[in-house]
View 1 (cartoon, rainbow, N blue to C red):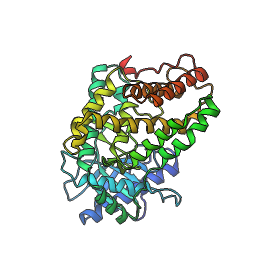
View 2 (cartoon, rainbow, N blue to C red):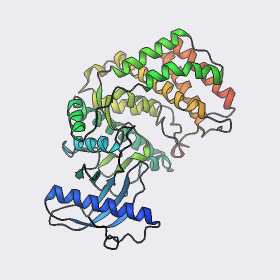
View 3 (tube, rainbow, N blue to C red):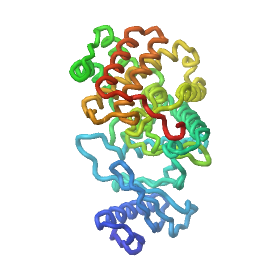
View 4 (cartoon, rainbow, N blue to C red):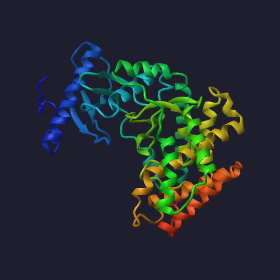
Length: 393
């Protein structure tokens, strides 16, 4: 299709390469909608939404259509995939297809209005300019931030409950898009093997064989877990819109089916993978976990048993802290200090792991985690008390 940039009203976009990318995305979206509805649909006024992933992301106006479509839509247009990496287009397309097949009450994300595998484009319903969860955490209203976090945790539980037992459906759809079902995540097992040496070399902390074996067992358990459901994987607060209809999840480029308890660990170690992660007030994480748990015990009744639940959560908690530390420890610079630094975040997570393991009688893990936290404080401190999000200060 010939790209007529004037027809798309995008002359306000700055550089020519970006202008062409937006025009190409708009053309691909028009083709996808035409194929879906069987008639030409014209889009105009592209607004660059500057997504953080590989796709060009824009909002466009439906200028003309013989069908009842929303006034505006969102387009995600992907480049050709890297042969050495998984294809984010396939993962995201299948994720949205999975949710679009659900009722609107169970759909925790935008609706997929159209897609085209050849042109690697997705056309999604537009949720508007709603604030993100990150915006709420940066606000000055603690009550609103607290309510939003609980809503987010409940929405995550609803997502898990409605997609449990749908792994075969997800994988079948993925194959239709030319993707391959993800192999079991080996990162936790790799962290269990690598981190003891890193801790010794960087922090001078020795890891007893009993601790290393306990972590290996935890990493195996989370891969073999029975609580499997869809996960966006990237749960960063910036990827969650707070709409009038509730929290909605965005960006499924890494979406896959995995043990839902891995996501729950990121309620206890809040948003660990997010570079902007800070602290939450006392009791907030446990309130979020309780909100999540209330949504899933109907589908996984075993999690109503406190002993079963706390054991599964400790396994995923251990794996989360070890994995994130293995990712980041060697990248920390001595200048990375202070209450908002990644060093402060790591120190906080290890102290929390020590506390939780101690309460559950896992004394070896508790003692080792406390030693790591103290070593991080010695190396990168003083002053590593992790700051709270602005809403809670």
